[in-house]
Length: 503
Image (cartoon, rainbow, N blue to C red; front, side):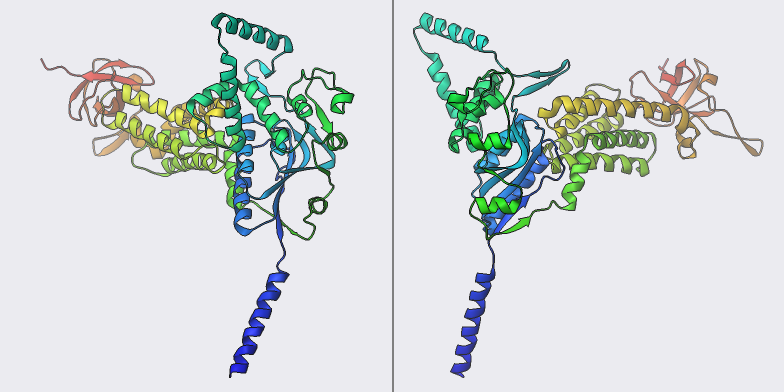
């Protein structure tokens, strides 16, 4: 019996040993899912999740592909945050690393570049109503600023520049390490953007022994390089862009590789298994929902659906469709990382305020205005306030189209729809043992006619005037159902009434 147990134990040990030896070390690979696409929050969040997974599962490294024309600097700086905090070796595989793509690549532990790849042109730009403008400072402007600073120092017999430089150095250190900034540091980063930006590039270069001047020239068009001192001649007033061969010779990148397997050989991980990471179907759906054209479509459908539901009793198909469209809009932007659930909560509050204005508070005043402002603000917030120009374009276009559809439905569709008959000016008049339908025209209602409010007017509702059920509205006053009303204005589009004052 003891012999059998010993044999079983030996087999278990041998099996475990064999399984342990047969288990290969793995390296995760993140392909860029769309060729030459701008850096974005969705890919950044996916990289963040993959780095955490790699750390949890003991992966040897993570290779992430870069093939981009650039993107927003604030998104690139968020990449720096997650790469600086990674406990797993990170390798950027550059095919086209331009602008923000070059900045992200510099934050990786190692950089490999495709033989046909390029890297550089990281000059910051600003999108304005008049077009795209570079955010740079000419050397003569810097000299003038330096002279003004020295004059100020001489007058005050102090050296505020040293204190400012220390604050900037501390700020750059926090940015490159991914630490949170105080409100004062955020203000300083905005005011001294170029100084902080160039200093951040310098720190990234120094951390991985890359040429500081060459990398500065990628962002600053006024930096000149010489063959003797920097290894390359660059006299043009333009940001530097390097080919794969130039980048390797200058030490900007570490390897030139045609395949992922070649990268592993170069970094000493040749025996590892490459495991490609794929986004889930849900993540792809979220990216689709956050696409500007789709977001605009969802806003339009949401607004029109909510309008139709307000015009109809109960809660039916239009309301469900509108709420669903707006839910998908917010869900998509939350999923790609543009915002959290705050905008959705704010939008829900705006709907509550509007309902309060319509059904509880008489007239249309501050509560309704707050509801409208909160609703529009929630849409901008969903895009992220850093995308304010982009959001303004999508939201304004969506609201414009929604208003056109609402006007069209109000004039041409809803009055003819059987579903909305009970809300229009049609009425059934009983008499002579038969029912006649009289024309539903507000123009047939005479000014001075007296009727009775059949519903609360808040300020719109229904009244019976000249033996007809008529859609009416007040000038903002609240009238309770059952009160007598008198017509003070009647046009082809509307009937305005006021409460009959007791004599």
